[in-house]
Image (cartoon, rainbow, N blue to C red; front, side, top):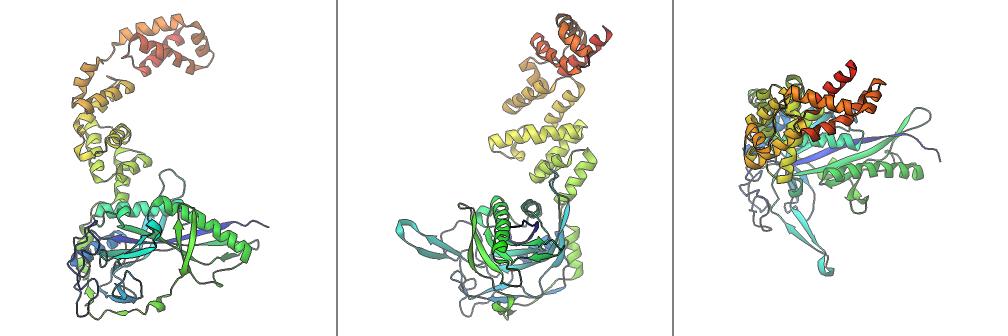
Length: 491
């Protein structure tokens, strides 16, 4: 059977729980971890006669996010009822937004600091507010197949962000979600805790197959539901592309021949499992919610929110690279850790006057210690001025890099300054005349290395570095290499 190339077509629907203390239309708590069904009221469980009232803070957080996503913000938006029956939806409908969402037509730029794909702009179809449903708890222990319902989550404010199908690989999809999650945390919109369900993703996937005549055909679209880790998302997308290609080879079924289906991802087995045919919008029988007034957002309010936005991750990366000369990779590592580490790095870079070396120390040594100790940068005992002092000593040549790492570890462990740690560890700059004397002895004692260097193998001098360190542990390898080569050149 002939093999054809195909493009993986990916669009993502991301459901973000907004960081409010109360639900979208009532005053019940949104705190995670409470006993089942202890955070409900007549409004969120849909008792007759109860009336919803919009949570203004939820709308403001959604507005801020939509503006950060470069979306158009209409002055008029309304609430709609999305009607469907499911055990964890006691009202029989979900309050959402249909034809007049609060935002639309935005975009998010993504890139890969490792260079595995070209920078890309992913379009945002819409970002709209809606309430969450409850949660079904499946208990299969002791041979039972019981399902219980926890309605604590019912009515929690969600922002659904729907992308265009602009992504072409699992890596692009992961980069989009990583950048989106980072933006949300910088904005303070959501804690994005996937383990607690604050960030959930549905992926719409199909493939476009290249035929020999130059045309393309599309396979039926599949929606992979409730992916709750970035690793699962990558694996599910890769699998589904391969599955759809094999299915097309067997059936030749195209997007015109079958309705959209939803599937679930079984990570233990590494496969998607069919769930049901996907409903169309008409199946939900949308109509305006009669209990909620439309929301008017004047242009002046939109501009006020726009002007109050914090510096976003993409802008920070660009500024760090331009101002401090750091690499795209290092700027990404720093920014992805959060604003406190950005501020820490900038303070070190300014005090040391060397952004590249400061980035090396922060991304390697500082993050290593934080990972080992499980702390955060705010409580890290080595403050920026102290690290900057060490960086300056390395730049000036007063200490070579290997011994500087020993000093760093001592500073962190014992809350000392760089000079104090150097004194305790017996580290000091070697006098140049002493170093020259050592190098002359080494060159005289190693004629074969001299011959190799004169024969064009300058790297052979590296064998002398360890010998110099044995003579004096404080010997700077760079200085030893330079002096030895100069001595040999004059011979």
